Amino acid sequence: MPSLTAPMVQVSRETPADQALVESTYYVTVGIEVSQWLLPVAKGVTFRPAYLAVGVKVDQSGRLYGKPQRAGTFVAGVQVCTGPSCREQNVTLVVLANVPWEPRELTFPGRAGTALDGEIGINGGPPGVVPTFTVTDHDKLPEGVSIGPDGHVGGVPAAPGISEVPVRICVAGNCAGVVVRLIIV
View (tube, helix red, strand yellow):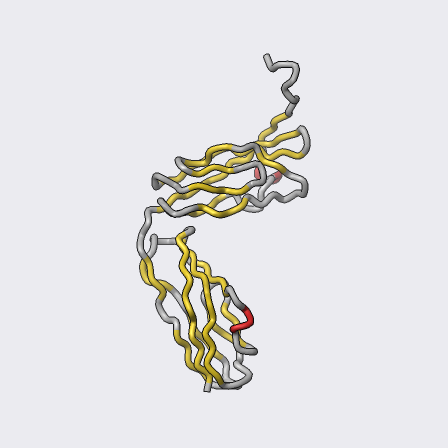
């Protein structure tokens, strides 16, 4: 029986049509610090701190943190709370072995006024994991050129020049910074 000072909390199970989180599956790598957030579908939500896998926890704000210690797929119920009412939603943490990877193409030649069509890509990494690419300084991109989250280098460069664009590549939480060189004549 709960004590008189314990707050009353209702807990209900989520149904697939009534999910409390935008995303419930996260891919991380053994031995690499996790820095991700649970994204609720509603405002004003808090979480009950809990372990999700060996070495990985979620705090009250929904931050996933820690270093995964063991590869595997882990499913844990997370309490998603709005005021005194909480709902449990399963979160899946896929912990992959630390498989080395390296970027493929980092230099892209082109002509001003002509469309670029290139791909950064990676060699290695865990099979089946899609890397993500993030430009960390958009001011370094030449006018008319973009680098997408899938590593696609495209657009029509407006003027000639050499640009060195910092890009962060992540493969299941295993991230590295690279410099993409665009040589436009």
